[in-house]
Image (cartoon, rainbow, N blue to C red; front, side):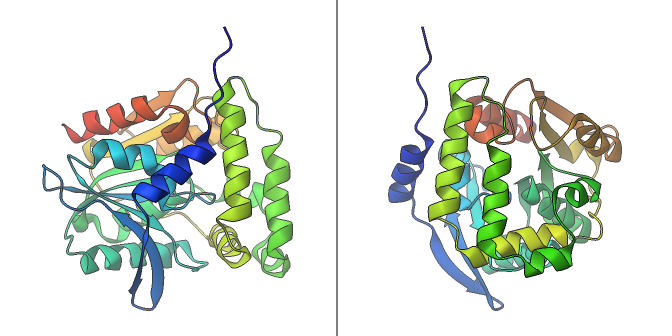
Length: 274
């Protein structure tokens, strides 16, 4: 029997109808956020997406954990500096009345969460670094120099990503579905300015800050079949945080919070102790 292909495009549209993002301006930065409000534990989880994600890309985590936690998921402002994004996210939490938060970031978001935990460890509880990086070497291999990125039209940058995406393997139906979903997101949910800001945030990084939290408060999430994060790159993240908990999905690709949503939520619950 052939497994049905999930329709992530329809799922996202239905979620946005239930939980639309709200616009919030803080210190001149325009954010779009999904804020579930207080949960039973009184704790907060900040969700930071990757280059191809907005706040609603974490829809499975948001819906599953909203009864327990206050979940704040963000769409980044048009800021081409990952460190400024991290500082803005901390300011945003203050604006929302949140003193401390667990933080989970995937890909670019994992860089943002490491920066938050580096610069504001006292405001950071558990840190999840998911499908992300410890050094800029991989970015240098994937992206042109920052001056070239600045000169490249957004449409051309999108075309590069879409072309690379065609090479991602599709060992199961959900992997063809995630590619269709991401292509649709890139075409319909990202302005050229928004996407170019994300690309520049990566290309302009000089280093990736080290999270300054104890390893018992740090979880590394990876996938063996991640088409963007090669095994040596994954190992460099593990080596950066010796003793941290490492969870590796056998399959899940670069977006296991979508393709392996139930297991991903169970992992978060387990690591946060509820």
